[in-house]
Length: 281
Image 1: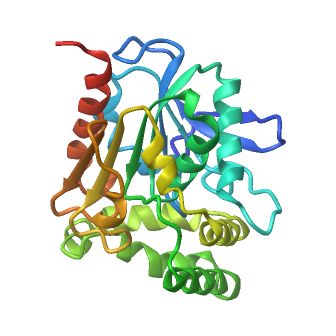
Image 2 (image 1 turned 90 degrees about the vertical axis):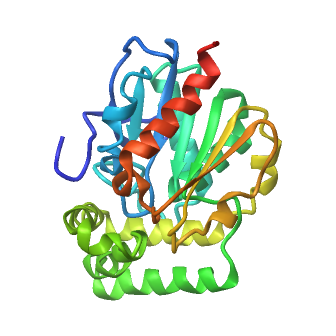
């Protein structure tokens, strides 16, 4: 483990991508063998985004947290664009290499976009699905302009300059001072992102499809988590689906980073959601 990732293992995937990931291994818990809880991080993040949540969920069973391509300790292929489908292919190959039959998938921000791309092709591999501060909507015209500006900043001023401007926007304004050590930690993680990988990821997010129908048509339990103070993805953009098999949770006071702003509440919500599927009262 390094300071910017939780990854304790690495795999060379059939597509040539080297993925670093945290794996708790098979442990006795609520989730049966052959199934794992998989957590995907956001843009310019890593598996370390989830480090404060782990103590609350580690009794669920096997936990797997990858560093997405171009992030953390995973390799960064020399592609101009990292499409969400390419990230999803990495995930599909990873779970195949790990011998997993089904997964409980939780995707934060970028990780949510990847999760939706995965769900579109591999819904049969899902036991449950969750978006955490993410959305099934495509980028708006304004957001696409923002992606272009992000790419320009990364290319012209470097990843450090981009992350310095990005990270404060991820936190609720009231947390910037009180959680300044955590803000600094998230910046450190972001600064370790491959500049080329970050630019390619930004372009992939800009290009992503509208996947509201994917989310709506999933047959598995779905958990949608938003923060009341999220200035990046407002709650209404997360809560694009509803129904008897959909749970909507608004975390009061949280910005875009509940895994570090309110890890106990997020962790407990994850546990309750997974427990409800497996534990019959």
